[in-house]
Amino acid sequence: MRILLVEDNLLLGEGLKDSLSDEGEAVDWVKTGKEALLALKSEPFDLVILDLGLPDLDGLEVLRKLRGQEASLQPNRETPVLILTARDQTADRVQGLDQGADDYLVKPFERDELLARTRALHRRATGRSQPVLDFDRLVIVPSERRITLDGNDINLSRREYAVLLALAESPGRYLSKQQISEKIYGWGEEVESNALEVHIHHLRKKLEGDYIVNRRGLGYRFAADSAKSSDGN
Image (tube, rainbow, N blue to C red; front, side):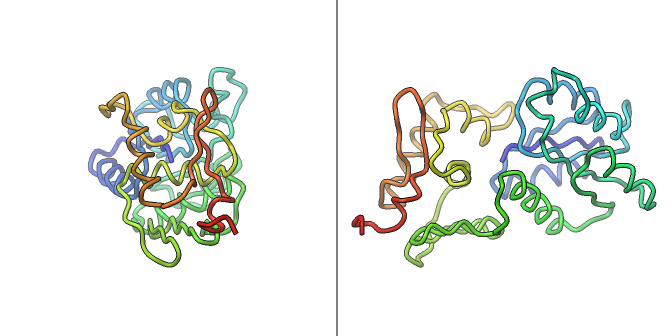
């Protein structure tokens, strides 16, 4: 998942970025409302975590522009937004939700609750309600970052896990190399030209099946039917 984190508190921002990155997410962190709007114009994101108390634009103004009619923000207009704020009055929460926020978390909060809320928002955005992706032999448990094949745990690197999850959340749909890379790499990360192919090669070996299909000109897709049985039955 590609996340835009908008938080001006350096200590909190660093902690959130580290926590989300440890979960396998690609996190881009900005510290002002203007930087957030520039990012939203230039990159597609799966989730925005937005602080309201920003030093330039109020977070609600950023939210209004995101949910408004600005054509330049079109790629992210429907992106889920989780608001972070020290404003704990009911009226403030209602205003944020009415402006288009999807969820609200009042500071201070627990790390595990933040992570659970990000997963829940992403599930809803991808059209699923179940917390587990169950493909019979292959099971993915995002809350635990756990993968099992025939009941046995599969050890994946952070990048391998991110690639698998990006594909498994859209079974049967081809994703281009660029689309996958946008979901698993943040700004400033050095990426080798063949890095994605290497991750997929390792995934195929570890999953022991044709779960990831490549088609020239279209990209890669997760073949959910291949997870039914290793011998095709």
